[in-house]
Image (cartoon, rainbow, N blue to C red; front, side, top):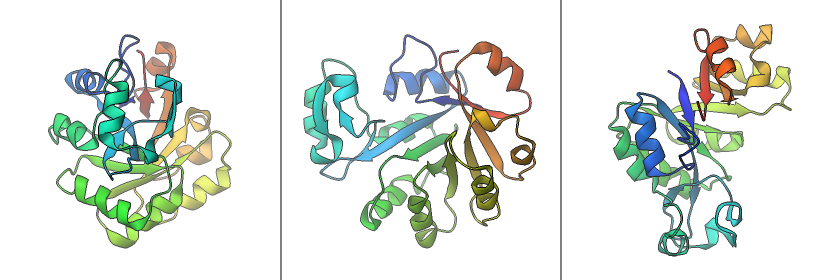
Length: 212
């Protein structure tokens, strides 16, 4: 199943908001979203560590209560709670949940409790320590290592040997690498932004794409 990056199904939609996710699910695609914890331990779907890029507000997400974020951003786009996005998925479409910060054990447990009834969730992170913490607590939740373009092939291959880690999320830079293609894991390649690329790879690879 191909996945829509931050729910951006087309150029008219905003990233990580309920309307975008709804459109993505209506098109029968799964979605990728990013998560942060607010000061009052609410899990929100939001990419950045601060509100600056999207809202020109130089405040850190972790230092704000969820109601404060809603009030500061309500005139522009909504910042949804993860639980509302999960409900929207109707347990039917894949939801890739990317953990952006390094979480403490308390927040890991809050996250696991939030997704416990949703088998369609895959937890991913570039900060692999999050995934190690999750696996110590829960042996069943689906998780995957994320790797950037600058990652070493040897590190990707090494991670593929680990048991109980089902997914690899890889920069599209690696899509033509034979060693990576031969890895026997569920592999998703990001971010496909051109229709030509999408049509070229969609039959043989799982893709994370946007604006097509």
